[in-house]
Length: 212
Image (tube, rainbow, N blue to C red; front, top):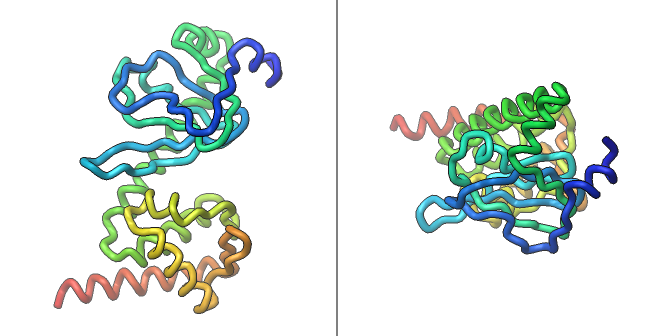
């Protein structure tokens, strides 16, 4: 089924700032992004943490209709969005009729589990510098590209539990050291191996400092 046909059957448009669902609410629908970006965030005590920002082709909200659990996070439209809104019965019919849908969902869920592991690894690093550098290095390694587009310090800071100023300062220091190049909101990493070695040095330095 083509994109426009899907949108006519299941599509809805939402303006920027719309809260699609809130953490703790029951979930009866999942969403697929056709256009725009959706921010997924959760609270840890009084702190609001951005878990991810999803763009076209991404889906979210499926766990609540698969296991009947309350929403584990809050989803908000970061931009004007065109979304497919799919209820449990429709999702079940799609999976039964098209095995490719089930395979894609399994692949995406596996990727999210891997990303959660990476997030835990990042948050275990005490040094804010190491967190930012690890994020840059792991993103380059994961995507196979030497350029990360659309790097917003506020979003990166929320993911890594550091401040936007720390993100900017670390990226600026890496640029001065010739390890990255900052161009119009993108981070270019011409020599990923050098960046990896610098991160190893920081981690070794941190372990030595903790042992003193």
